[in-house]
Figure (cartoon, rainbow, N blue to C red):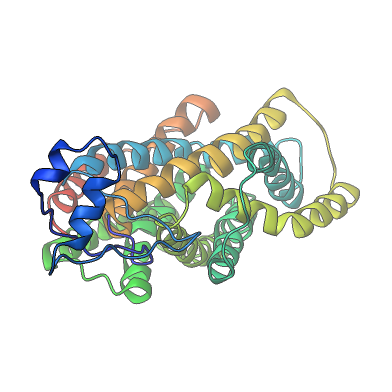
Length: 344
């Protein structure tokens, strides 16, 4: 994927001379080429200028699909893990602790590898990522899960691919094909119908919180996917966690003093997964996948996330699988197949 900020030097024409092939002087060939009239001079390299990265056409697509799918798999456990965490902690405690704990491995990696802070122009985007996926989405969905089942929340959040694609089109100027949008809308209709059937046709407080979570998460995903073209995904989410650390540390201290705390094996395991799996490792794979295959295309893989969450809800929480789940699963998988065959 071409990096718009990369300094790409114009390609020179290789001109050979007999001396260039026979001389033992390593610099002779370069000197000979430079002295031939009409040969373009190589662009000067400025210290700190990113190098253009070239890959074989189509080579990153398979890897990008795999990484994005791994991210979706990690995210599919987020709601069940949140439900486990809420068994022994309050919602604010769960959200703030998961972010603080996720900052530990992220910050340690940044320090150990002596990663330089991002350029000033990238900090605004990192702030959007921090507000959307580090604070906003976890908080809104956790508050919603106080009164909503994980299966219901999962199908509502199934609208995230469509909101992410729309946000990407506005933010980056992407223009997915008509087939792409039709398949996306069909997938959205499927998950909306599924959600309406489960909630009895009436939106409640938890639904409003979940819809708000969709908006902030789509903004964070879009900005994070753009930033992942300029820096490794783990660095981008690491700096977002570090940027949010003053808020999350203060919030964790206040929440622990105000909310009841009863540590159990499930509550501790839930928060640890949220911190390490969902908040850090899942984000690393997800953002790198988006950088390789594009924001709109990667976002459609999340159409499978509600169905995976339903499966985890049955296995880990003992919830009953809704009867419409098999039909919804088939329709969603068809939509994913269509969107992956279209060009965004």
